Length: 288
Ligand SMILES: [Zn+2]
Ligand SMILES: [Zn+2]
Image: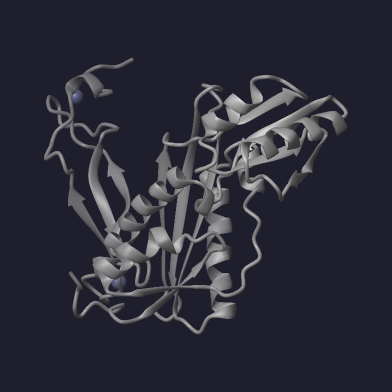
């Protein structure tokens, strides 16, 4: 149902994407805000780099994401812009379990609204595998990534900067490319990775859809003071009093909602209704 009276109702919001992310973003922005998401006509970003190495810290992703959203204003005559950035890879502590994080940024340059929502996820087909030429397991690995519904990249192990970009349309062609890249590699290995671009990765598109709903839902909430969209959680304050002695503990006392436009903030009680912390977690009652 359209939300009449929302500042973004009937407005256009520019989205920076080369990979059809509007399929994930447009529905919640239409349903919750009655806003129209439009894709930037020109955008030069290559996301491959963020998916072949380690998962960078979320701060670095946020920075990139905000820069990408700013780029929207160069090519579209809009006041609001959206961009997303994701990163997937092995977890340091559990090398065989891949995971990822998605970041989505929203800018309203007339109101000064700047909102970043993140969504960590374990739902991913991310893989990075090395094979020698003619390894009989190549075809199985390609299918395990989800090909052909999901895309794959093939790289030469000693020349990762030049991935095979064309001709990966059939299983036979992917296997042939793996063999060819392995033979020309200094170490005799080819690298197979899952294509994480949204339009070639239905699992990533689903995660982006969930994050888009989260962001649109936040934008529904207007600041009680200046009425800018996006009033919501900006952190919390610790110090919930101990149930026995009343001294502050490290437990969260209040959630803090804030407005990125005017800086107004409000404390909100814990969602679980707790007003005291367990004495076991109290540094006074239970010193280490
Ligand atoms: Zn405000
Ligand atoms: Zn205590």
